[in-house]
Length: 111
Length: 139
Image (cartoon, rainbow over all chains, first blue to last red; front, side):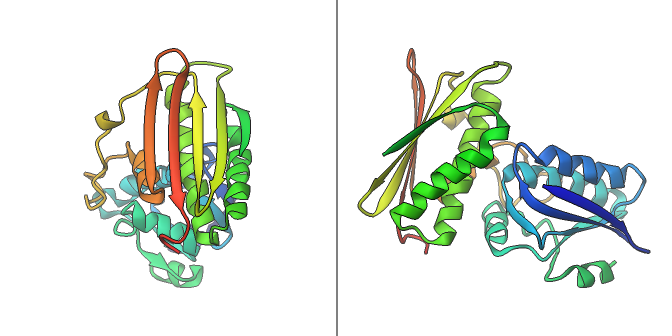
């Protein structure tokens, strides 16, 4: 799994490629905390190259979403969610907790 | 029937998913179903690695895939700590962000993705988790 971070005027973006599971989810957490630790709480997660995500990844996202949404200071939004991952997110009831956009440009533009 | 013993380590989740995915493909499942089976196997394996073998080194996870007419049976055998599945509360998938509990999600997904999930804590031989999925139930 690889994560690249980009910074825009109004938000940060993390592009995650590969598979997010119990083995790699800590790296996702670390990347998210790298952004929030800088006092930045508006984050786009670009999932266009993500192949797979298990509940370990969902939990990482949930923890960080709580941090970002505190005091209404920001949130994590999801961009280009692959179909299989979208289905799993729906099953886990996570689609209510995250706004989703079909591409990252729209997601960045939402902030 | 194919059987592989894995070291109980998160680093082996890729191999575990590949093993069950290959069996699910041979059984005739659709791509969506194969993904579901791999996800269920991942969640089950992760729970065994994290909880059954918590604090233990050198644990083994034996996984057996049997293809039958119309489906697949996956049996996971570990020698770690047993637990009581009914003691794990089902996550409230409608709760809002502040009330959403983090635990129990793996087990919940397993039960949703597979048609049958049974768990037998066996005193000396270890724990046996059986998951069955039938072809064509969710396309």
